[in-house]
Length: 203
Ligand code: SF4
Image (tube, rainbow, N blue to C red):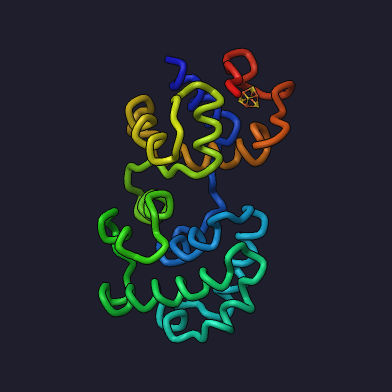
C-alpha cells in the first residue's frame, strides 16, 4: 500500500514522466555510458554534442579516439569512455548488424555496460518491464524505506518484489526527476515535499 502510494504521488507530480528522453537504443546506450560518474546536466549536452558530429553506429565505430575525447572531455573518465564508445560501436556493427541488441545477456557482453545501462536501454528503448537503478533510484528507495539495500543490483531485485510490474519502467524516470529536484542527494527539500507525511526519511 505504501509503495503504491509513493508511485502514485510521483506520477501525480510528474504526469508526463521523463518525456524528453531520446528513446533511440543506440543513443540511450552511449548516453548512459557517458553518464557514469557524471552529473545529468553535463551528460545531456555532451551526448548531444557527440551525436551532432557522429550520428550513426558506423560513424562512431570509425571515429578517431582523440576526436571523441575532444567532444566528451567534460564528462568523468572521458579517455576511457571514448575508447569504450568506439569498442561498443564496433561490436554492435560487427556482431549485431548495427542494431543494438534487446536482451540483458547480450547487452552485458558490451564493454562498460552493467545492469543499469542495460536496463535503461531495455526500458526506454525497447519498452521492456525493467527497473533501471541509478544513484537516484537507489538513494530514494532506501531513504523512503521502500527497500533496505546496499547496492543498486540488490535494490533492483527488491524493488521488483514491491513495485507493480506495470510501473517498473516508469520508476527510473520518476525518481530521476524527483531526485534532481526534491529528494536531492544533499539537502533534500523535505519541507516542500509531497511525501513529507509518509516518508520515514531514513539516513
Ligand atoms: S520527505 Fe525528504 S527524504 Fe522523504 S522523499 Fe521527501 S525530500 Fe526525500
